[in-house]
Length: 406
Image 1 (cartoon, one colour):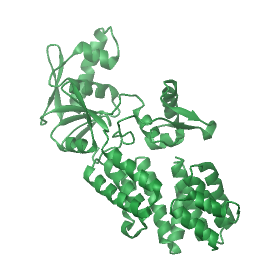
Image 2 (image 1 turned 135 degrees about the vertical axis):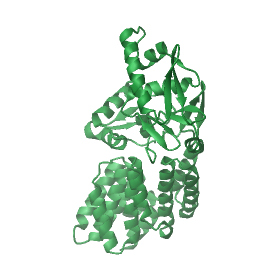
Image 3 (image 1 turned 90 degrees about the vertical axis):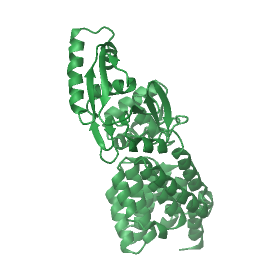
Image 4 (image 1 turned 60 degrees about the horizontal axis):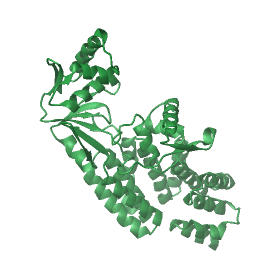
C-alpha cells in the first residue's frame, strides 16, 4: 500500500475526512475509491459514498476477497447511516465470515457491531444483545470500543435498565476521548443527554409529571398497577395483560385508571371510547358488553365494579393505579420518535422499524406532513422524511419496545 493510501486511511481513522480526500481525491484505483467513499460518508453525502464503495468492491473483485469484504462492510455502514434498513444482511454476514477466515479480526468485529446496531434500531433488542455478546469489546480499538458501548447503552435503555446504561455510556465517553474523534465524542454526549431527558408521562389522581429512565425503572419495579399507554398493556409485578389488539378495551382501561380512585360516569366513558355526544341505548348496551370483556382480561390484576353512576377500577394487589403515557399525545407519536433522531428516513425503513405495513406508515407520514410536523424531500424510492426534535423529550425511546415478559 503506497504512502498516500496509508495517510488517507489514518486520516479517516482519526475522523478527518477532508484530510483523506486531499490525498486520494484524484485517484480511481480501488483502494482510493474505497477511501473516498468512506470519506464522503463521514461528510454526509451517502449517495456518492455508496456509489464509490460499490465501484471499489467491483474493482477488487474475487481475486482480493478481503478488500472486497471490507468494502461490503463499509457499504453496510453507509446503508445504516442513511437508514436503508432493507439492505441485504446476508452480504454482511458473508463479508464478516471472509474477514474472520483471513484473520482480519477488527473489521470482522466492526461487521458484527453493525449487525447489532441495525437490530437495535429496528427494535430487535435480543438480537442486538446477542450479536454484541459475541464480541470481545475490551480488545477492540478505542473508537470501535466506544461505539459498542453506545449500542450496549441503547440496549439497556430499551430494557429500562438505567444503571447499566449509565455505566456503558461512561465507558463509551472515556474511549471516545481516547480515540479523539469529534463526531464520536458528540454522539456519546448526545446519548448522555438522552438518558437524563424525560421519556414518558405519569398520569395519576388527576395530575401529570414527566419521567426519566430511572423513574420508569423504579415504577415498573413497584407494586403499582400500571396502564401502559406506550405498549397498550396493563401490568403489575410481573403480570401483564396485553390489550394491544383491543383498542376499545384499552381506552376503557385508561379512562378508569386516570380517574382512579374515583369512578367514571357511563356517559363520559361512552363519549370518550365510542366518540359520540348523543348516546342511545345501543351505546349503553355495548358499554356493558365491553366492560365485561375488560373485566375478564384484567381478572388477574384488577376488578371492574359497577357503581351508581358508572364503573370503578379496583386493583387486586397494587397500592396505586397510574397511567404511563407517551411524552406527547399524538396518534403517530412512534413515527415522530424515529424521525426526530435527526436522520432522513424512508417509509420502507420506518415500516421495518415499527413492524407496520409500509402503506400505513405512508398514511401516517402524509397526515403528519399535512399538519406541518414532518417534511420530505426527493421522489419515489429516493423520498426521505425528517422532523425536528421534540423539545425536552427522549424521542428515540418513547417506550415502544416490548419489555421482557410482554
